[in-house]
Structure formats: C-alpha cells, structure tokens
Image 1 (cartoon, rainbow, N blue to C red):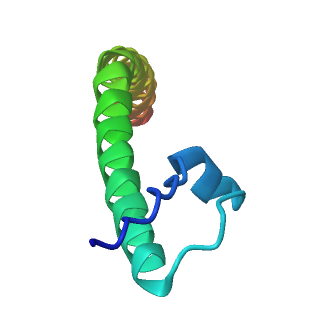
Image 2: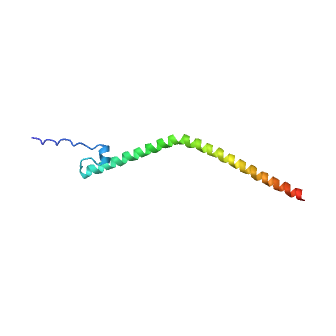
Length: 97
C-alpha cells in the first residue's frame, strides 16, 4: 500500500509576498520566493528605466535645442554689446588725440 501524497500547498502570489500576507513557508521556499522577487524587481526596474528613457528622450532633446537657441541669442547679444562698447572706446581715443 502506498502512502498518499500530501495535498499541494498554495504558493503565495507576488502581491502577497510584497505585502507580507503569505503564509509562513519553509526556509528553502522563502529563499526561492525572495530570489524570484528580486529577479522580477530587477526586470521591472530595467523595463521601467528603458521606457522612461524612451519617453523622455524626445522631450529632453527639444528642451536642449530650445536652451541652446536661447543661450546663443544671449551670447550674441552680449557680444554685440561688448563690441559696441569696445568700438566706442576706440573711437573716443582716436578723437581725443
């Protein structure tokens, strides 16, 4: 006569593990659950980071272009002012001679 197998135990869902609602599992199972959870977390983090980068890249590109145009405009204005003052000073020196 064979010994009947014990009924299968319900494995906790990922949500239960994260919330801590899972029934107590033997140490070996807890280690396995922890490793799987860490692996899933790494995968989620990787996918999330990639998606955020993909979503932000066009917006950051547009912002960078706008910022560069603004900086170039400010630089051009400053250079015009500097050159105008330098020319005025030079002309003043030549008149004073």
